[in-house]
Amino acid sequence: MTATAPASVIHIIDDEAAFRRSLAFLLESAGWMAVEHESAEAFLGANPLLTPDGGCLVLDIRMPRISGLELQRRLTTAGSAWPIVFITGHGDVDLAVQAMKDGAADFLQKPFKDQQILNAVERAVCLSLIRQEANRRCNQARDQLTRLSPREAEIARYLALGFSNKEIARELSISDNTVHVHRQHIMDKTDTGSAAELACLILRVDPSGLD
Image (tube, rainbow, N blue to C red; front, side, top):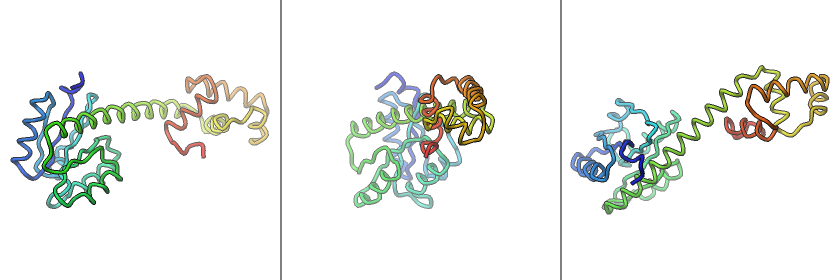
């Protein structure tokens, strides 16, 4: 297990109480923190937050009322960073493939070996840490870009696209000196030192921001 594992929380969402208890015991014996939920509704009602130490959901793909796939869709729509390890029964492979296409971290078909689920959870927790770091960097970049005035944001995009000061001045019908002044303000406000760094900042917030 990694050093972060003991503080990582694994949420088990399954309508079979015996399975939940058994899996929770296994995960806890391996050093994880496990929380049981009898349904997707129970999980949504608890609305647990993903902690800085990461975690994941172990989710039954077939459940009454709100299915595992429907819960996945709701979490994706809400921008959730929870990675999902789906548990599937016999004949659910097509559903599992769809879940993977929709962003699931992994899926295991019952019955599975203890080490398989432990390995899947380990990978999912690592993914949650990667996602959280990406979200942190995105939020930081967004904060830096919101310091810009509308005119500075406009010029910043031209700079990130590789336009020279003269080209920007011509595009916006302003003087070269005005562009130069704006450029300095943009670099200062965003803590960037080049057009390439500025481009990375913009793309971190919106991958299509320079299209």
